[in-house]
Length: 236
Length: 221
Image (cartoon, rainbow over all chains, first blue to last red; front, side, top):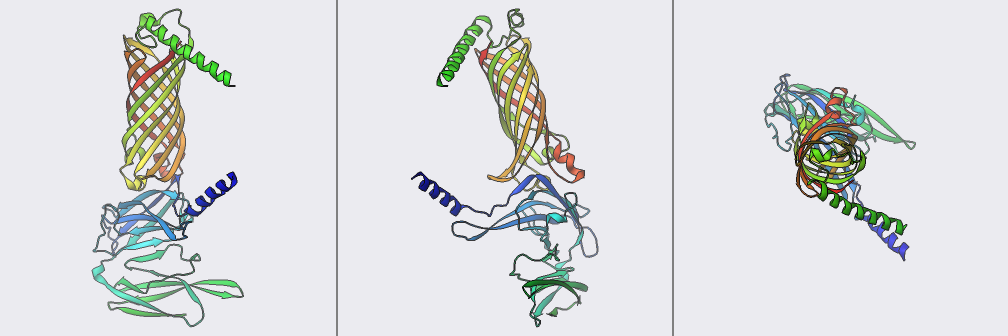
């Protein structure tokens, strides 16, 4: 009887247990720092900058996908455009991102300028518990045009990652682009708001299976942006 | 085994009763407040001095460190259980909790509370000042655990060492009961890994706490 009761409690705990909670080390502090400027390199003051951390998980009872997310640190840039933030190192995260010019708890977005983010940050990017992003440029969204990317896949490859580098609004820069993606269902963005008169680098990663082996390769193309909207077809 | 516990309990009860009698015959204070009586030749150098100190504390922080620059003291409490004395030296294990609210998210992280748990051993030296009033400077040393939390969610723990010094001013109220005020400086050294430029900022914390509490005497022999 005692065994049955014990088994019942173990089963209840196992079914209701969640593995979605973000966990932190507490005794390790990470420093992110850098400088935010406009397209001409002049510092921007009062731009909100924050660190976003997420952990995907499942509830044991219904096996629903749930997630735990934190804006673990935030600040605004000073008169020199500089920012500096500390946060406790997470232990079980799926993603760490630096968000630039996205509204956080007490600091509104500067709607004159673009926003950007650096995704997929990993502990290996740190040097002595610090990551210096150097200069990050934002542009005035009033001075923007659009870039549409169409994909024409003729060779049986699959795109596992796609990233733009340049002055792009709401861009999600994969900080570790060359690393393989864990999630096999990658969704890429097709339409972007970009600054006029620049050259944008389109990076993409392809994946194919040859004799039960996965072959991953990284590619880059340059796209010239003028003052008119651009439709670009990526053929591979 | 049961008999042993019973014997210890009876002995403690006898001690307690004896302490009350002894105090009532000698001084108004539980552990002899008046200097003339305190210098009694019959008083043993080593003895039991069992009393509890319970207190509220207002935590503070000083210096250039994350506790001082990114937190604001909220509230705290503590308990000490003195067991023995040698001459005028008193030895007590103690626990103190101090709670802080985070005021600078960029330095401390987007976390609401920083809670400091200090487990220590205190050595105090009692000085009789005037009737009913004693001053006891003390030093402490022990272990430290800092826990950062927001609405029950943990953002990790830091462990390390803590050392302190301060002084109590005890004012005798009535038999076995005193009121006391305390000023205490604590140096806290959690073991935090950080960028070399900021290691000291996270590892050398300084508290300045002011407390008010009650002392309850149980045994003084």
